[in-house]
Structure formats: structure tokens, C-alpha cells
Image (cartoon, rainbow, N blue to C red; front, side):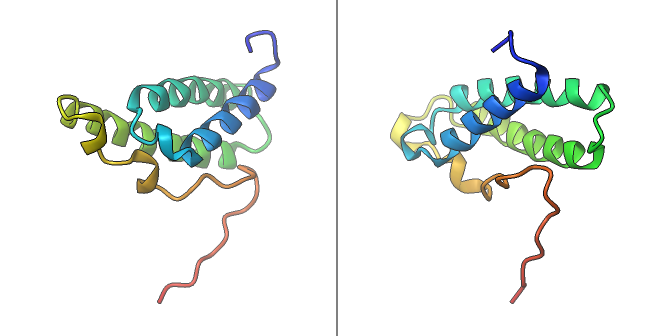
Amino acid sequence: LSYLPVINQSKVLRKCLIDLERDSRASRDYDRHTLVLTLYSECLGKLVTRKETRVKALEAETLRVQRRFDVLALLSTTFESYPWEKRPEYSKMFEPLPLDPFSPPTKRKMC
């Protein structure tokens, strides 16, 4: 992974994150999610400092990742002594990441 350009690293890690969030077996594995989020966040930080052309989209993606990271920190400390099967499923707490982080956000109809 370290041999790839930063933009490609972020694409690989983002795919890993999306796949991990879809996998119901890993939804209680907070450490694995934290690891992937940390690596992906580092890549996003490198892209923002390189003055990529789509800074707003990168900042929005960074905010989505940071929210997930904050929730994982809370869950990890709160439920560390609980049995695996009693932990809340992390991946159900968020909407999935958009397939394309650079596409404009879609407006959802509110009831």
C-alpha cells in the first residue's frame, strides 16, 4: 500500500472501509474499524495538504470519517467489558459512505 500514490492509497482504503461496513460479521469489531478509519483519515489529510482540486469534497469526506471515529471511540470505551454479542453494531449507526466521495450530495426528501 505504501508504494502506491496517495490518491490510490485512499481509494483502496475507502473500498476497504465500505466493504467492512457492509460486512455484518465485522460490525462489532471496533478495533478493525478504527484501524481502517485511521489509515484512511491519514490519506485524506495528505490529500488536503497537497491542495487537491476538490477540497470541499475532501473536507466533507474527512468530516464523515471523523464522526465515525468519534463514535467508535465512545463505543470502544463504553462496551469494552461487554461480551462480543452484546456490543452494538457500529455499522448500523451511519448511512453508507457515498460511492463517489466527489459527487455532490443528494438531497433526500423529508417526511
